[in-house]
Length: 349
Ligand SMILES: Cc1cc2nc3c(=O)[nH]c(=O)nc-3n(C[C@H](O)[C@H](O)[C@H](O)COP(=O)(O)OP(=O)(O)OC[C@H]3O[C@@H](n4cnc5c(N)ncnc54)[C@H](O)[C@@H]3O)c2cc1C
Ligand code: SF4
Image (tube, rainbow, N blue to C red):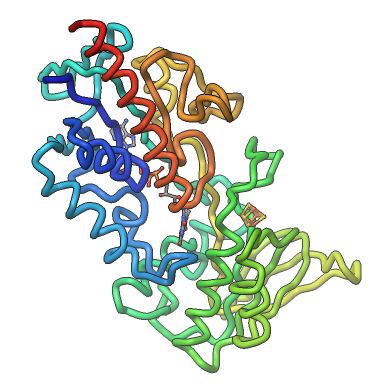
């Protein structure tokens, strides 16, 4: 009987890794620090996913169900790894409840943290109730409550979505592009227009990165079919005149100052490195890259590797990722981990 593979993190990447391994007969211990599996799409209550249009609770919920039910996967919820020692083929992990697990290989699928908009105070979050984040709008839609102004519950007539909040911003130490937020925002803008036919939705952008096949499906469709308006702008501040929120900035196409009133302002927040990464780096003795994500080894010949042999990584743990790419990386990490377990088994025989 081979040793299990330890998978840390039960989001899309970890679920894909765990299920992939179990489906070919390899046992897994899946350690998740929260009390539920599913990662950000479930824990943060996302609505309809891009690009499939499926509800997160259905699409990721199905991944959770097949993982939780699998006889070869032992799920350890509200649990973390406190200590990790040994070498490829023969690791020992001590969990926060004191249990010790022998593992042949391990996969870090510990994901990301949402940018905290309080770090961008000039754009009004934390000061005005009706300045919210894309995660809050996702929750308004997925809970069925509808998109409403938190201050008084009214239906907004004018909504501004500000892109790149906590991404591509060197002043606050976040140089990276978070990859999904242009497309997620265009999708949310269409959902708002679908629910509130009289609501005008504006997207403030530096550049639009609805990359690959998303250009037609989201960027053009949101303008042509849903009349979402795009403004290329540099935003100075979000204030209030006592009745409405005021977005001030410069229209960078015509090079003129613009001041526009809104009922609701939405921050398209970026994907930060997991706040646990310093701790994870020390516990797993694994290198982080310059921004604080878990550093990948080789990009091509051994894609899921880290700086430590036998320890693999997948998904948003190594930088902003989409769900489908996180799933693919989880499966690649599963394959790499299985190779280590099998090699060790052959060596022991
Ligand atoms: C607002 C917003 C909307 C988005 N919408 C979409 C979309 O529609 N489509 C799309 O493709 N992508 C979307 N994304 C991106 C999507 O969230 C990520 O691609 C996906 O969550 C990455 O999966 P993951 O498993 O790598 O990480 P996560 O989803 O972050 O999962 C990581 C898991 O690890 C657990 N964990 C963390 N640290 C530890 C630890 N120390 N010990 C144990 N467990 C730990 C966490 O609790 C979590 O369950 C969106 C992102 C944002 C910000
Ligand atoms: S995906 Fe779009 S909104 Fe997100 S950081 Fe990149 S450019 Fe900005």
